[in-house]
Image 1: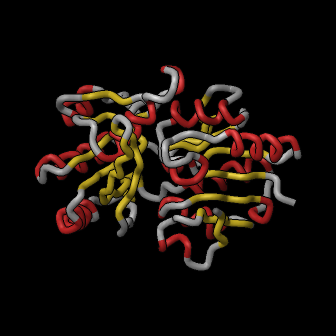
Image 2: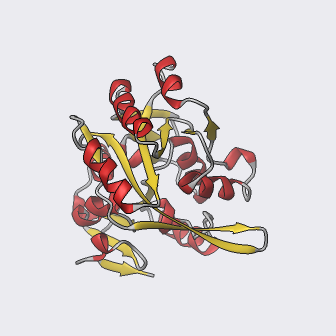
Length: 273
Protein backbone atom coordinates (compact mmCIF):
# COMPACT_ATOMS: atom_id res chain seq x y z
CA UNK A 1 0.00 0.00 0.00
CA UNK A 2 1.23 3.49 -0.84
CA UNK A 3 1.66 5.83 2.12
CA UNK A 4 3.36 8.92 0.65
CA UNK A 5 2.87 10.90 -2.57
CA UNK A 6 5.45 13.55 -3.50
CA UNK A 7 4.32 15.93 -6.27
CA UNK A 8 6.23 18.56 -8.24
CA UNK A 9 4.56 21.94 -8.78
CA UNK A 10 5.35 23.66 -12.10
CA UNK A 11 4.20 21.56 -15.02
CA UNK A 12 2.70 18.97 -12.68
CA UNK A 13 0.33 20.04 -9.89
CA UNK A 14 -0.05 23.57 -11.29
CA UNK A 15 -1.67 24.28 -14.65
CA UNK A 16 0.03 26.43 -17.30
CA UNK A 17 -1.03 29.59 -15.44
CA UNK A 18 0.37 28.50 -12.08
CA UNK A 19 -3.00 27.56 -10.56
CA UNK A 20 -4.10 24.44 -8.67
CA UNK A 21 -7.43 23.53 -10.25
CA UNK A 22 -10.41 22.54 -8.13
CA UNK A 23 -10.35 19.04 -9.62
CA UNK A 24 -6.72 18.60 -8.51
CA UNK A 25 -7.58 19.84 -5.02
CA UNK A 26 -10.45 17.37 -4.81
CA UNK A 27 -8.25 14.43 -5.84
CA UNK A 28 -5.58 15.41 -3.30
CA UNK A 29 -8.21 15.77 -0.57
CA UNK A 30 -9.57 12.29 -1.33
CA UNK A 31 -6.02 10.87 -1.23
CA UNK A 32 -5.29 12.45 2.17
CA UNK A 33 -8.63 11.18 3.53
CA UNK A 34 -7.44 7.65 2.70
CA UNK A 35 -4.55 8.13 5.12
CA UNK A 36 -1.91 8.81 2.46
CA UNK A 37 0.43 11.76 3.04
CA UNK A 38 0.67 14.16 0.08
CA UNK A 39 3.66 16.49 0.00
CA UNK A 40 4.99 19.05 -2.47
CA UNK A 41 8.53 18.57 -3.81
CA UNK A 42 9.45 21.74 -5.72
CA UNK A 43 12.31 23.92 -6.85
CA UNK A 44 10.53 27.04 -5.58
CA UNK A 45 11.45 29.02 -2.45
CA UNK A 46 10.05 27.56 0.76
CA UNK A 47 7.49 30.32 1.44
CA UNK A 48 5.93 29.82 -1.99
CA UNK A 49 5.77 26.05 -1.47
CA UNK A 50 4.25 26.34 2.01
CA UNK A 51 1.49 28.63 0.71
CA UNK A 52 0.45 26.11 -1.95
CA UNK A 53 0.79 23.20 0.50
CA UNK A 54 -1.71 24.84 2.82
CA UNK A 55 -4.00 25.62 -0.12
CA UNK A 56 -4.25 21.90 -1.00
CA UNK A 57 -4.53 20.73 2.62
CA UNK A 58 -1.01 19.28 2.84
CA UNK A 59 -0.19 20.27 6.42
CA UNK A 60 2.76 18.06 7.40
CA UNK A 61 5.91 18.47 5.31
CA UNK A 62 7.14 20.01 2.08
CA UNK A 63 10.35 20.02 0.04
CA UNK A 64 11.73 23.24 -1.48
CA UNK A 65 14.72 24.34 -3.52
CA UNK A 66 14.96 21.04 -5.42
CA UNK A 67 15.68 19.19 -2.19
CA UNK A 68 17.72 21.85 -0.40
CA UNK A 69 15.11 21.98 2.35
CA UNK A 70 12.61 19.72 4.08
CA UNK A 71 10.19 21.86 6.09
CA UNK A 72 7.92 20.77 8.93
CA UNK A 73 4.78 22.83 8.28
CA UNK A 74 3.11 22.13 11.63
CA UNK A 75 6.20 23.02 13.69
CA UNK A 76 7.16 25.82 11.26
CA UNK A 77 10.80 24.76 11.14
CA UNK A 78 13.44 23.39 8.77
CA UNK A 79 14.27 19.78 9.63
CA UNK A 80 16.76 19.11 6.81
CA UNK A 81 18.88 21.52 4.78
CA UNK A 82 21.69 21.65 2.22
CA UNK A 83 22.19 25.33 1.42
CA UNK A 84 24.54 26.68 -1.24
CA UNK A 85 27.50 28.31 0.59
CA UNK A 86 27.95 32.03 0.00
CA UNK A 87 31.41 31.60 -1.55
CA UNK A 88 30.12 29.05 -4.07
CA UNK A 89 27.21 31.35 -4.91
CA UNK A 90 29.62 34.21 -5.53
CA UNK A 91 31.74 32.05 -7.86
CA UNK A 92 28.63 31.25 -9.91
CA UNK A 93 27.48 34.88 -9.90
CA UNK A 94 30.92 36.06 -11.06
CA UNK A 95 30.78 33.81 -14.13
CA UNK A 96 27.26 35.01 -14.92
CA UNK A 97 28.23 38.66 -14.58
CA UNK A 98 31.40 38.27 -16.67
CA UNK A 99 29.38 36.64 -19.45
CA UNK A 100 26.32 38.92 -19.19
CA UNK A 101 23.87 36.06 -18.80
CA UNK A 102 20.55 36.29 -16.94
CA UNK A 103 20.38 34.59 -13.53
CA UNK A 104 18.31 34.53 -10.33
CA UNK A 105 19.28 33.66 -6.78
CA UNK A 106 16.67 31.69 -4.81
CA UNK A 107 16.90 32.33 -1.08
CA UNK A 108 14.78 30.95 1.74
CA UNK A 109 11.97 33.46 1.20
CA UNK A 110 12.47 35.19 -2.13
CA UNK A 111 13.88 35.21 -5.65
CA UNK A 112 16.60 37.82 -6.21
CA UNK A 113 16.60 39.21 -9.75
CA UNK A 114 17.65 42.29 -11.73
CA UNK A 115 14.82 42.06 -14.27
CA UNK A 116 11.39 40.50 -14.88
CA UNK A 117 12.37 38.01 -17.59
CA UNK A 118 11.99 34.31 -18.33
CA UNK A 119 11.08 32.32 -15.18
CA UNK A 120 10.69 35.45 -13.05
CA UNK A 121 8.25 36.99 -15.54
CA UNK A 122 6.16 33.81 -15.29
CA UNK A 123 6.09 34.03 -11.47
CA UNK A 124 5.24 37.74 -11.64
CA UNK A 125 2.30 37.09 -14.00
CA UNK A 126 1.21 34.22 -11.75
CA UNK A 127 1.28 36.57 -8.75
CA UNK A 128 -1.20 38.93 -10.41
CA UNK A 129 -3.88 36.23 -10.04
CA UNK A 130 -3.19 35.66 -6.34
CA UNK A 131 -3.77 37.58 -3.15
CA UNK A 132 -0.57 39.01 -1.68
CA UNK A 133 -0.20 36.39 1.06
CA UNK A 134 -0.10 33.61 -1.57
CA UNK A 135 2.33 35.21 -4.01
CA UNK A 136 5.87 34.02 -4.79
CA UNK A 137 8.09 36.75 -3.38
CA UNK A 138 10.32 38.48 -5.96
CA UNK A 139 12.98 41.02 -4.96
CA UNK A 140 14.35 43.39 -7.60
CA UNK A 141 18.03 43.93 -6.81
CA UNK A 142 20.27 46.37 -8.69
CA UNK A 143 23.50 44.49 -7.88
CA UNK A 144 22.97 40.88 -6.81
CA UNK A 145 26.68 40.22 -6.29
CA UNK A 146 26.99 43.06 -3.79
CA UNK A 147 23.75 42.03 -2.10
CA UNK A 148 25.00 38.47 -1.53
CA UNK A 149 28.35 39.76 -0.21
CA UNK A 150 26.65 42.11 2.24
CA UNK A 151 23.98 39.64 3.43
CA UNK A 152 26.13 36.78 4.68
CA UNK A 153 23.30 35.29 6.73
CA UNK A 154 21.00 34.93 3.70
CA UNK A 155 20.37 31.22 3.09
CA UNK A 156 20.70 30.34 -0.62
CA UNK A 157 18.81 27.37 -2.06
CA UNK A 158 19.86 27.52 -5.70
CA UNK A 159 20.77 29.75 -8.64
CA UNK A 160 18.87 29.60 -11.93
CA UNK A 161 20.41 30.66 -15.25
CA UNK A 162 18.36 31.42 -18.37
CA UNK A 163 19.07 32.36 -21.99
CA UNK A 164 17.33 32.06 -25.36
CA UNK A 165 20.53 31.24 -27.28
CA UNK A 166 21.57 27.60 -26.94
CA UNK A 167 25.24 28.18 -27.88
CA UNK A 168 25.66 30.94 -25.28
CA UNK A 169 23.81 28.84 -22.73
CA UNK A 170 25.98 25.74 -23.30
CA UNK A 171 29.20 27.77 -23.10
CA UNK A 172 28.18 29.03 -19.65
CA UNK A 173 27.34 25.48 -18.54
CA UNK A 174 30.88 24.36 -19.41
CA UNK A 175 32.39 27.12 -17.31
CA UNK A 176 30.10 26.41 -14.36
CA UNK A 177 30.99 22.72 -14.34
CA UNK A 178 34.57 23.67 -13.45
CA UNK A 179 33.40 24.88 -10.03
CA UNK A 180 33.99 22.16 -7.43
CA UNK A 181 31.23 21.14 -5.03
CA UNK A 182 28.15 22.23 -6.96
CA UNK A 183 25.45 20.41 -8.94
CA UNK A 184 24.60 21.83 -12.39
CA UNK A 185 21.29 20.45 -13.63
CA UNK A 186 21.75 18.89 -17.06
CA UNK A 187 18.96 20.43 -19.15
CA UNK A 188 19.07 20.24 -22.95
CA UNK A 189 15.54 21.38 -23.85
CA UNK A 190 13.79 24.75 -23.88
CA UNK A 191 11.40 25.61 -21.08
CA UNK A 192 7.97 26.79 -22.22
CA UNK A 193 5.66 28.90 -20.07
CA UNK A 194 2.29 30.44 -20.93
CA UNK A 195 1.40 33.94 -19.75
CA UNK A 196 -1.34 36.40 -20.63
CA UNK A 197 -0.52 39.85 -22.02
CA UNK A 198 -3.83 41.69 -21.89
CA UNK A 199 -6.31 39.48 -23.74
CA UNK A 200 -3.64 37.54 -25.63
CA UNK A 201 -1.70 34.44 -24.61
CA UNK A 202 2.08 34.52 -24.97
CA UNK A 203 4.57 31.65 -24.75
CA UNK A 204 7.95 32.27 -23.10
CA UNK A 205 10.71 29.94 -24.28
CA UNK A 206 14.25 29.74 -22.91
CA UNK A 207 17.05 27.39 -21.95
CA UNK A 208 17.77 27.17 -18.26
CA UNK A 209 19.73 25.32 -15.64
CA UNK A 210 19.55 25.16 -11.86
CA UNK A 211 22.61 25.07 -9.63
CA UNK A 212 22.66 23.72 -6.08
CA UNK A 213 25.15 22.33 -3.63
CA UNK A 214 26.59 18.98 -4.68
CA UNK A 215 24.29 15.98 -4.10
CA UNK A 216 21.14 18.06 -3.61
CA UNK A 217 18.15 16.27 -5.10
CA UNK A 218 14.43 15.91 -4.41
CA UNK A 219 14.83 12.15 -3.97
CA UNK A 220 17.51 12.59 -1.29
CA UNK A 221 15.11 14.87 0.61
CA UNK A 222 12.31 12.31 0.17
CA UNK A 223 14.61 9.59 1.53
CA UNK A 224 15.15 11.71 4.64
CA UNK A 225 11.36 11.81 5.13
CA UNK A 226 11.10 8.09 4.46
CA UNK A 227 13.54 7.40 7.30
CA UNK A 228 11.68 9.80 9.58
CA UNK A 229 8.29 8.22 8.76
CA UNK A 230 9.69 4.67 8.62
CA UNK A 231 8.60 4.11 5.03
CA UNK A 232 9.97 1.85 2.31
CA UNK A 233 10.44 3.19 -1.20
CA UNK A 234 7.81 0.72 -2.40
CA UNK A 235 5.31 2.76 -0.36
CA UNK A 236 6.17 6.03 -2.16
CA UNK A 237 4.64 7.58 -5.30
CA UNK A 238 6.37 10.48 -7.05
CA UNK A 239 4.91 12.67 -9.81
CA UNK A 240 6.85 15.14 -11.96
CA UNK A 241 7.64 16.45 -15.41
CA UNK A 242 11.19 17.79 -15.58
CA UNK A 243 14.81 16.75 -15.33
CA UNK A 244 14.97 17.76 -11.65
CA UNK A 245 12.24 15.15 -11.02
CA UNK A 246 14.05 12.35 -12.85
CA UNK A 247 15.74 10.68 -9.88
CA UNK A 248 12.67 10.69 -7.64
CA UNK A 249 10.58 9.24 -10.50
CA UNK A 250 13.12 6.50 -11.18
CA UNK A 251 13.70 5.54 -7.54
CA UNK A 252 10.18 5.61 -6.07
CA UNK A 253 7.94 2.58 -5.78
CA UNK A 254 5.76 4.22 -8.44
CA UNK A 255 7.10 7.09 -10.52
CA UNK A 256 4.57 8.95 -12.68
CA UNK A 257 5.48 11.43 -15.43
CA UNK A 258 3.21 14.10 -16.89
CA UNK A 259 2.41 13.63 -20.58
CA UNK A 260 4.09 16.83 -21.82
CA UNK A 261 7.30 16.18 -19.87
CA UNK A 262 10.85 16.53 -21.15
CA UNK A 263 11.99 13.45 -23.15
CA UNK A 264 14.80 12.71 -20.68
CA UNK A 265 12.15 11.96 -18.07
CA UNK A 266 9.48 10.22 -20.15
CA UNK A 267 11.72 7.36 -21.25
CA UNK A 268 10.71 4.13 -19.47
CA UNK A 269 8.22 6.01 -17.27
CA UNK A 270 4.49 5.81 -16.66
CA UNK A 271 2.72 8.80 -18.22
CA UNK A 272 -0.15 10.80 -16.74
CA UNK A 273 -2.24 13.31 -18.66
